[in-house]
Length: 348
Ligand code: CP
Image 1 (cartoon, rainbow, N blue to C red):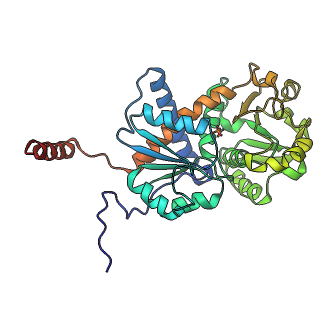
Image 2 (image 1 turned 60 degrees about the vertical axis):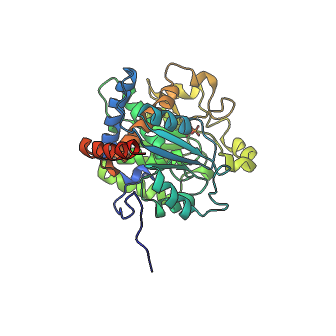
């Protein structure tokens, strides 16, 4: 016999929106998230962030290290009146004593949002499979959607001459990383130009280029994958990322030999891009490898504005996804519960 659930949460939700990749969102939806970012950033400047995540919690699973993603989600939850829980595999049972399915079921009965940085897409997909609350991908080796919001927002903030995103071409220097893949798909949706400039061995997989090309057919964007650094000449945005990830340390020497010196972002390379081109980097940066300190500290570098906008993005993500998923109780309902409980306590 199956007993009825006594859950206080709605376990029958079928239309939960998760955030796996920006490819799952329309331009309108991405624009909405960025407009929300702009309001929340203004509110933060005025020390007046509305308490739109009050009483709510985001459970944050980190299978890999992080500075920006972790700190930005924690601070965003605090600013919005809520709480963030840092859950590393060392501290919880995930993947050891407890399956991904069961971890997801338990977290979704207690938290309002689950955010996960995983070492494999399977872990993220497993969390989503059993979750009854939105799951946000904080990087899963395929995609880095929360980074995308910060990146596009930062670019928009720094365009001061009336151009829009679709007027711009972005050059990603180096490896076909999760950030590169995410940028290619997002730029294609926005009708932007996108180039990956890197050695042939480390260029983007064809299936993702094909998907980006289908977006370009609708949006007017264009994609170019090349090993020719001179192709940077018509690019408005130059983007850097590490030449290897923590799981690729055994390939480090081979990778550095392939990428350096040709694909390193130097001041000389920036001078080859379009006049006024800006430099973004998702950070962490290694200024002895993929980017020089000189380039990173130049007036065209917006990498640290971009890092700060991770916080702007996470505030918007917590508000956007919790708003879509939970119905706020009316004041009358809240008062009715409070009176019942305080009446009970008074009678003890
Ligand atoms: N860019 C980025 O995701 O930074 P962290 O790895 O520090 O979170």
